[in-house]
Amino acid sequence: MSAAGMAGSGRRGGRMGFPEGFVFGSATASYQIEGAVDEDGRRPSIWDVFSRTPGRTVGGDTGDVADDHYHRWEADLDLMTTLGLHAYRFSVAWPRVVPEGRGAVNRKGLDFYSRLVDGLLDRGITPVATLYHWDLPQVLEDEGGWRERSTAEAFATYAGAVAEALGDRVDTWTTLNEPWCAAFLGYGAGVHAPGATDPVAALRAAHHLNLAHGLAAQAIRAQLPDAKLSVTLNLHVFRPEGPTGPEAARRLDAVGNRIWLGPMLEGAYPADLLEDTAALTDWSFVQDGDLEAIRQPIDVLGVNYYSTSHVRLHEGPVEPAPSPWSGADVVEILPPEGPLTDMGWNIDPAGLTDLLVSLHERYPDLPLMVTENGAAFPDVVEDGAVHDADRIDYLRRHFAAAQDAIEAGVDLRGYFVWSLLDNFEWALGYSKRFGIVWVDYATQERLPKDSARWYADVIRTGDL
Ligand code: NCW
Image (cartoon, rainbow, N blue to C red; front, side, top):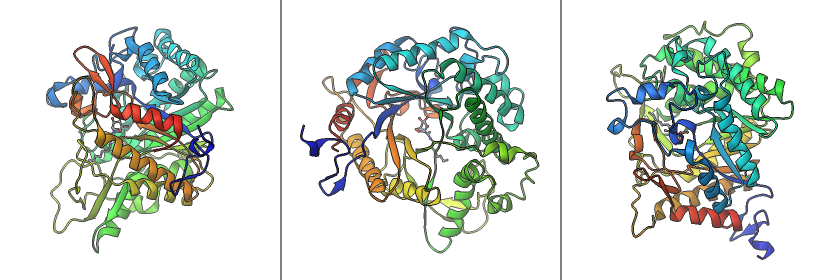
């Protein structure tokens, strides 16, 4: 290969390449792929209970079997080798490791992740471990779940136990994945587990997730002084429409983005968020010392990015309805303009550049990582292949957008495609396919889509 074809070698086709050492990976989450929900001492999570409740998921789908990754992990790691992945971002299931939420650690549960990590390292793939991707032990939900600070304390103990067991082999740790979804889709809009529709519960959950991040970061640091710590946020990009657009975007930015960035990185909740939500709560669940506990030094910020939202204020009165935007339900999110992905999300690669650049401007010393980007499309198998040109196009344009951000000076360290495998897409069950590898749920066969081959070439050559 010519020097000009190698990653990090500089300008190609008028665009900067990826820097030296740029990490190309792919991501999954425990409940979405593992299955084996009753094995080796695992106890139910809120997603087991929610998905088994009639009417909660499309087709009544559950993660009972999912991709059966718990039994097929070795073959899945071999698949990663074929793709040439540098890193694999997976999540650890709390209900496997501490089945009762707090208290005894289940050695068999930890052993699964220990084998997985060894298998990755044997193949030269760097493990990136996420400690919470939404599978809260149901026993803790029965005590109030994320509404209660005791859940944050239990999370820190669990995080310490995982760090102790895997810390000799895992150096990048992510406390939480998309706490916005856990708090606002789970406790506000009620479309994710545990299915509550209470705007105050959502705000309490947000605070206790922030606290969980801070306490877990401290617990990991205490075990592993050299660990690379991170948190992954789904930061929303709002496109203001018309004269009320900027005010709408400000409100949504407060409850969607700055509710996490403020306490985690700046040590305070934004004043405008407290004002916007004052009719709902006085935030007395924030106790002395919490903000110091939440603001912990992190080494990299994980960004999950998929799409943008065009926003303005509602004209006229707003009917009260379950919403994921506590205190900002006066906002109207306009119907997305096509072409759309199978999730109904718009395709706006420039939003990724904008987001990365604005984070870099606000936190210039904080390295960034795209911990998820990808798309669901209505794939079909034709003659033993999946020709997902739409996904390739989506990924190519978003990789290029990331390169634009790098060219603008952003310290972007890596990019994880969501997802390695088709999997259980939460409330949408198996009806949406995000994988670069097709999964036949009847046979559990894996079939790399065209996008997987394309990605393998990108990793090998650095060319889009
Ligand atoms: S649903 C969602 N996802 C997908 C999921 O598979 C993954 O586990 C998540 O990390 C793909 O990436 C994330 N994110 C929720 C996006 C927000 C939806 C906004 C709804 C507004 C009412």
